[in-house]
Image 1: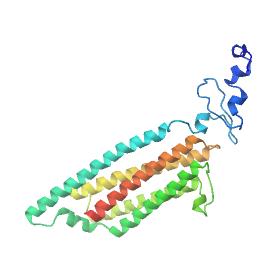
Image 2: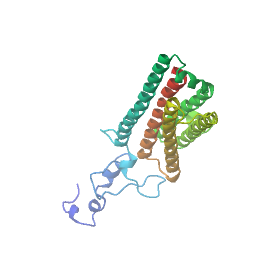
Image 3: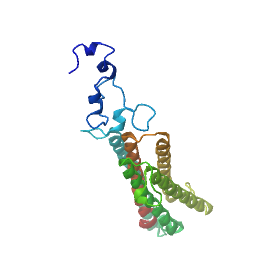
Image 4: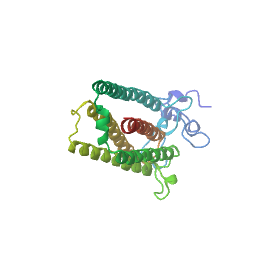
Amino acid sequence: MPHPDQESHPGSPKYATGCTETEKTGHTGRVTSQSDSLIAQDALPSGAIHAVSSARLNKPTGRPDTVAVGTIVWLASELMFFAALFAAYFWIRNATNEQAAAAGTVSLWDSSTQHLDVTFASINTAILVTSSITCQLAANAAERGRVTGSWLNPLKWGLREGFIATFILGSLFIGGQVWEYFTLFGEGFVVSTDPYWSAFFLATGFHGLHVIGGLVAFLFVLARSYMTRTHTHEQTVTAHVVSYYWHFVDVVWIILFGVIYFLR
């Protein structure tokens, strides 16, 4: 029991830290949350060079992470954006097919899809799907607090190895898409050629921009892991929300790939 006057003396331990040593570390020595105290001293984790808030170190109990929930809500809005692109694609397809049927000519979709390289696009798609696996390996490693591991065993990868591999695979996908674009440009097909190519370049182009956004996010997480000495729960949440985004981008591409290259 603290002395009754301990709260009022600036020199007392209670006044200086906002909690006793037992309240701060507990019986196991682990830092517990003291977010209700405005004057509580932050702990100095092993390897850290400055105090780190316990709210950043430990997972909150009794509620989901607000960053994760906010990311899911934002991805739902992104889903509506791509749904609008799909709706526009199918509307243009049906309108041009009806016009071709009425005129007794080959439809715009039938003539234009002949210029797509399905084999090349399939390889590019496999690269992106593989990147989703490496991304999840990185997120799982972050959950376990493993920042780095062995390159020789993917199951022992840390956050860094997984996200570096994902960044490389994602960059290869973007490089493949750029190659496909320039091939089509060389054949005289651009966004203003006709309604089909407008729909094609808009749908795949916006998806490519989202992939580039994911690559930037990977660089941010990687840079943060190299700049900090202590892996925190905050960094784990960041790794997870980036993986949510990347899986979303992958699923959208799989649907796009099926619609554009096979449904026709």
